[in-house]
Length: 584
Image (cartoon, rainbow, N blue to C red):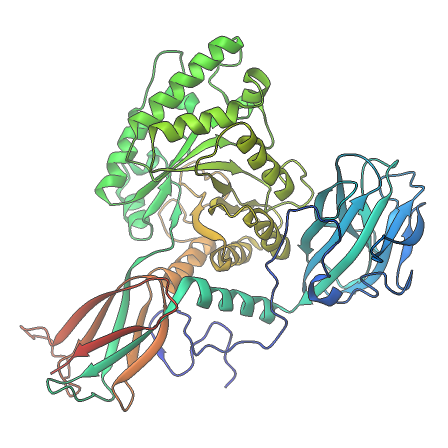
């Protein structure tokens, strides 16, 4: 029998769960590396260039042509490094090109090293044009003159056929230099294998259980049940005030999630709709609810950078008045919920919008983070942004822009802890780009959460959500996931998980499968001839149950439990966790 990648081998499982014996695919391992540093010489191409012909231009122009009206030339640096130059450009798309056959069943990761002839910075985008005139953005980078910048991205295509790679920059007066180009295809099985390998390495640790009797003799063929009680990886979903008086909503939610964020109830325009008239009624009520169910809360959000989403009285304030109002806001909300939230989105969507910087100067965000840190020393402080992992065509929300914003906050004087919030509002799910974008922001070495995950409605919504959640959970740099699917009788923001009777929609079924697989698995196993059972388990708290006797048959009216329970924890470790259990 051929096993699917997600199936066990040699183990009875009552819920989907990955184990050390899983079938893996022998393929090219994924390269998670990325450097944001601008280098004197480019690094070697990832995957040796993959399917790119002459990726380092060592064979001159072989495999390369000009695109549009650009002229193509291969030049050498003082160190002998060869690279392609697109010059005499007249339009943004004039550049160098190579033709490929792209298979719609493959996932492609792309990288290149880019430099421009002059100027401090220019955005260079890698694009693919198909023979039928469809365009795909594979990624972008901010390029400089005098050093090489790494461009990393990825793509899938809707139909198989030939496509031309080219590079685009809005300023036609600059020459574009290209080197160390790589286009590596992966099958879906190989991609899932990358996820499995990452989870085995980052999310799981090995355990070895031995069952023995009172004399220390091993007990063969003893049935064990291993049940995860608490997962270390945070996985949750947003809620709103509709949950407060709806028992069916409460039951559905609390049976699944231990992490949440409030959809609107902690936003400034809700908390202070009229100046100096604060109202935390809804947020307070939601916090009482979450506390009663031991649900951890992300604070969302102290400030929103979009000028259209301020309290109605805020945009008309003069700078000095705005500074005072912002100071009052951050002191009010952060102090009120001190010790009650695990994180704050201090600045929301500050890459796309700059309301506070435009009014208070370029260091406004840095001052807000420093102030929040001064009040709450324990809560993680996040930037929170959309389209960083969702849309390679959105330059404002790009990974390069995110890294630039981090530098801006640091240069503004804030040196304290900082975390990255990637909202994850997907319209078209592009998993190779999502992975590469996380690779790029992960180069900051800051904690990363997917904070508002959803997928737009359509025939592939559930399948897309499954892809997004598996990719996010498997990526070694991601530390938590929050779904943006709070329920309302009038409909959810973009993606519901249930109908109005709290029966799962296909998206809800996806979430339940993910929970069963990673955040609450129950495994039934049997010890070997020496009383041992070995596997790897997702980090978390577990309960191990086993029978007093291997001859025990459960009876309906048993007054004394024939089962013995043993609690244990699985943490990140290179050592195998050794557990010895005593069974009579």
